[in-house]
Image (cartoon, rainbow over all chains, first blue to last red; front, side):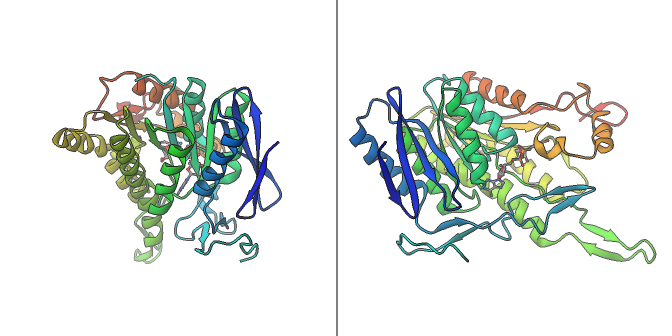
Length: 105
Length: 264
Ligand SMILES: NC(=O)c1ccc[n+]([C@@H]2O[C@H](COP(=O)([O-])OP(=O)(O)OC[C@H]3O[C@@H](n4cnc5c(N)ncnc54)[C@H](O)[C@@H]3O)[C@@H](O)[C@H]2O)c1
């Protein structure tokens, strides 16, 4: 299974029929599917190159989720809504190309 | 336009209505970009689509950010090579009346915070604008057939406790008229725009609600139940296929009425 590392994230490509599934190990240790059924008909080498470019676009350097803010739910009656909150951004951005983004903020 | 073979982008695709739309379009043969703030939900939806034999990509992004919007459009084009359908489902609520009074003095005790106003306008209105603007740019430059779908709400009619939400949703409902008018003016013929205004829909937010409050809401719904997210999704699928639908807002509410049976 071809793999590559980008921005502290480990990606792997898996063939499914004539397509490729791209999965990714998240910084918190979980594994998620970044894409399914990609790059139909491409060879492993070409798919890997495309996957690399795709990872660089969708997971830019310096994007890390830090929310949602579970301590301040939005309350309607007895309903507590812990949604993303644009006034307390869930994302922290930084702009330096680096393979060791800070894990602690 | 055929759904099969098309490429769709759904913001708020990690939950509720957006999730149903992403899955429905994938099931009909579209390749789908699932855009949301919540990575766990994105992963779940992409996995479900994969297990059903579909094609999808997940992109974590904040629709209120111009840079993120450019990134998820670019990511979609990089993965699938085109873009045909953009559905703007990302939305939030921050309810409250504009003023609250102290019961004893009758004076104002609380004002709706500007943060609550701004957050809802940012996500539900500016986010929709950015998504549709950049999706349309890609569709025009790529020369692909396209459909833009802002998600409004039946509360565009003006819901107490939702001055922020209703203001954003009435503006979302206006977008198809303005966008298509401008497209006609500019000679852009390959892109349509249809807004969807759902009524009370069974997303996790509503189904987890106080059951008495829910019963009170359902008393005013002719259908007698919440609208299913899949019903909204299939309406959007129909909008893709029926090219005469354009420059309009479609309500799908199950027959939501004001008390005493006046249709909303
Ligand atoms: N549920 C209803 O009864 C109902 C009725 C009318 C209209 N709507 C509208 O339908 C749309 C979807 O609603 P829903 O009930 O499925 O909500 P939901 O809360 O289940 O899902 C909304 C999704 O949007 C995402 N999101 C929120 N802010 C975001 C941001 N800034 N960037 C990226 N993603 C973001 C959330 O993470 C979530 O996954 C909303 O626009 C809502 O206003 C819902």
